[in-house]
Length: 411
Image (cartoon, rainbow, N blue to C red; front, side, top):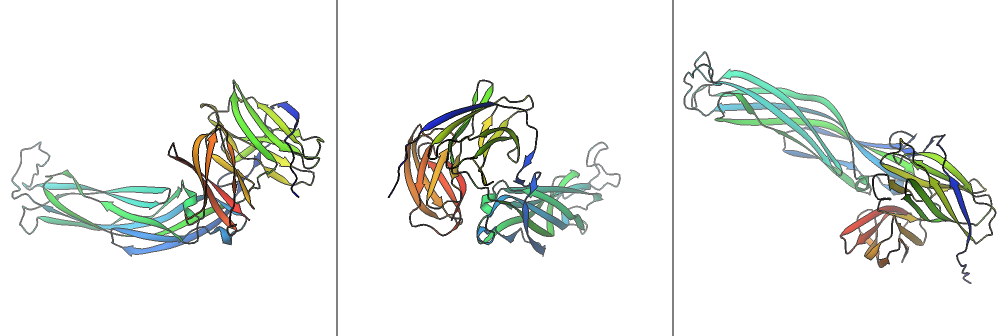
């Protein structure tokens, strides 16, 4: 028998903000509680091909249950040896007037060269580029067709064991059961800084390197299924937080937290749920007065602790102090998901959307068409329950050509 309860607002709680006093750190890539790291490495043997591909494993969530990929960093150690050649294409090396850049006391044209070499490492969300410069000359070259019209420089160790690091801006691309491909290439050309521009050149490079990916893994944060309609918005010089809390037991406490970087959170207030009747819903409201040091984007969330000490968190809301209010995006709850996904936008939407459940290989598992009329919340029921694991929920704005993506775990 299905029981249906009507939504009843039984209390309104208002508390003024106070100054943060204690740092609460969550799992992060840098700062806070350190993330668990998973490292894969690969070595590229010396080669002279135009571009080499380095293959490294993706992060496989099925072999790391309960962990979420927070961020990805590339680290590498690069070396390259170049050999450069130049040939004078001028048919004469006649003495030029003093003061001319091509003037030489020997009566022969003298060349000086600069060789910039750029090493590029590309991957999803990664574009790492390093440029190294070597100079050669001045050297005299004979007229074109003479035995001494050509000169060779090198082999030159243009860079040896150069180390670099770069964080990826798209960690979701590194999630899967296969491999991720990185591209490593070398580009260099001789440029004359003294002498004629009428010359031919050739540059060859033999390069090698060691590459690695560091996956930063954090425990999947349980989202509170009993917190809904959480909003954060500017109201004159204040920031207002509002949410609904379901009363399924006594002794519940709501701690309001905020962050300046989305990684480290400060508690700024507490609201006890009180002894409201089971099955009722309470509306809560909290006012935060930004400090002079609060600039840019602020992150807000609600930490819910029940009488048994179980902790869960609300969706995270972002307020831009320099903008109109909260950042547009979607979040889902509960997480992990069993049968139903509640999809909530950061603000009300209007128009037609396509909701898609996508697996880690990019395959669309299920779709649902939704029409919004100023509301921000909709429901997505799982048909033919997919296997347990990590998925993505994608919302496509069919009229505005925009899309929003968030990660979910299915139990």
